Length: 371
Image 1 (cartoon, one colour):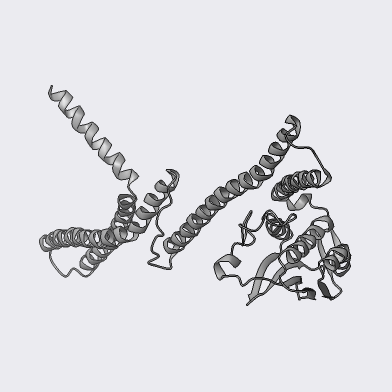
Image 2 (tube, one colour):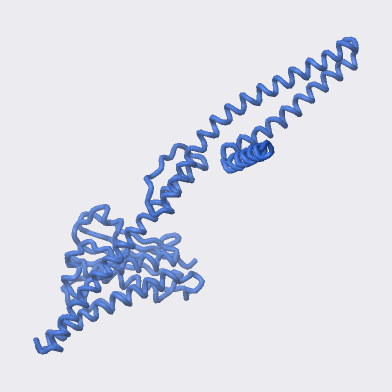
């Protein structure tokens, strides 16, 4: 029984050592104790040996007093070393514990993330590595939360955008099949428009997924005269602009950019379509300016005043500034046009943005220039 008790105590000590090894505080304290012991030992032994050499060299005391001197030196050395070790360990423990508090909070917040809940933003109390880590963790949490909200909104909007036209198609087709109603030109045109809406939505979803998965090395990049590309794109919309009794003002500077021509054409077309569909005035402005490193394209129109929080969301997928009206007019966007613009431009190494002054909204992009 005595042997089993000894084994139990030994196992308990081993488990306690393992727990200490897993604790960052004890690891840091242990490392610093080893460093302090090494420094104290080297310094103390050097001082003791130097004093002994002086005593031996100059014969300041007798042999018996020399031994006593060595013993006294050794005693004070050990006492001073232990005192220094205890004081240093206490000071070190206080500072290390204070330093590790943010790490423990980060650990707890990370655990909450792995369980599927979003923790509160952590307070940044310093500007050192731990403070920067806390800032990056807060930004990561905000990004994940925003991505989750976008995913839920995207699923909700996809289901809404598909459910409405599919319900209309099913209802009309069932009524036609059962003979409740008879088809006419107006009915078939309505069914065609619903079908075209579904087709546009699926095509835009496919286009967005293609550009999300596309790597820069797989893009067919070339030097493109961006002013000519803009002119060709605006010419395509001339009939629609005239039909809506609008005017288009184009002022673009000559410039060469590096990019995928099909992708950039899609970007300009989407910006123009967005400006036409949401234009509350009679004018649309398209400008192109050569900057030192980029070419800036801006498409402006007159619309409804837009709050600041809305401006930050217009490039998100399926975001509708006025969701109650987006189906009121056939041909309205599905909320993917600007998301596609953002994805393509970012793949080109450029930026997108929105500048608003009252009811005038300017959507702008930048594309790296050809040097």
